[in-house]
Length: 250
Ligand code: 4H7
Image (cartoon, rainbow, N blue to C red; front, side, top):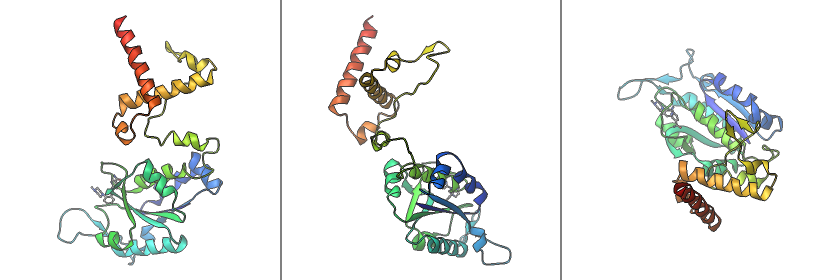
């Protein structure tokens, strides 16, 4: 998968490809990442990329000509790529959309707006998708593009070497992850649940499913609307109810 990030701040984006699992994905050639400086496509000797908004008002707007030239150049280098505009007005990004983008055979080109945003005509003529990473405002689209590249990269074949697709599925089944513990067995009077030290893998698996379910119930009950309880989960929740009742009656 080839990621191209069109930005006025390549120095913000480039280091992202040099760390952790993303860097490993680059080494393994599962992804290629590069930034393109939109300013390199400006059309005058002052390297202008912005201008005052028609109709007046505060702030500046990114001029269409450098942007269209940058997009066309990026498309020429990565033919068939999907052009994504990062914007608060876009389709809300979630794991489902991450999976969809990971299926994109050719590549992804991200347009990162600055100032008050980009000229509307670019959206109409050259943009395939408008995506938002959440209902908040940022000073530019770069962080949003990196969020998407990160979430998509870890879904690509071969990137998460050790993990099976079943394990990856557990991130995507509309439940929160179970609680994690490592050594020492006691930390500041807090003990690791006994079952995790028992070596009984069936019991551990059931404990983890219960942990995942309880956390979802307490922190994100809205996820049960995405996928309702299955029979196994009903049983685990009933058991939890009984445990709580016993506790209350003690
Ligand atoms: C494109 C259009 C994405 C990019 C407008 C980008 C949040 C997100 C930006 C803007 C972003 C997200 C211009 C919107 C300046 C805010 C004050 C850059 N913010 N801006 N306005 N949620 N900002 O994905």
